[in-house]
Length: 306
Image (cartoon, rainbow, N blue to C red):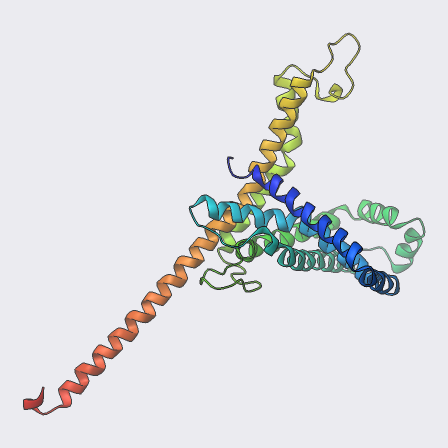
């Protein structure tokens, strides 16, 4: 609760650095921007995936990396690398997570079309009214199947996030558990079961944020449905009440978000301890093997030379 509010400040600084970098590029390297614009015009897919990478990075990946970084620092670890080191790993992991989500949803939709009793002609007819109508009508016609596939997609994406928490922690501090520079996807899947439970809990609590705020508003004597527009005959909502509600909402969501970052830090420390124990065990075995060799060598020497 003390550390995580600084995530918002750190994320604002990250965004400011990105804006300054783009402004500098536009000022000093206009030819590169023209070349980039021409490439994006010819290959709009690059713009789409690049936008997805930036969106996922700034809204999910980079905040987790910052949260893990602050979590490591709260344990007394001194980090020598700055926040600028988070830009490239954040965009890379953001692109990978975006592609994973797109691929998962695409496969799920293809499976839904293959299993659904609706024919291809039915889907074609629905598609003429737009993708939104297609999805809504298809789900309405096959509610149970749609719920099963949506549930599987949710489980897969939750599992992917749980498996990625340790690599994101390593990227956040630019160091692997083996005390080396960050290696992409190092520690993928570490403590998967425990982290899966943590991520599920985080998502469930996030979904409960708005109902929780409604309960707080009710306890304050406010009607959640009339917070933005007071009913006739009722006193208007004061600025203090709004500030309290906003503060409670931000505090709650930051605390829920910190569960994932804290889980990643604890799993990172667990992997770090395992690597240290394995290294110590290997050194002990090497030392024992040397002592065995010395004992064997002495046993083969003549009696007077031992």
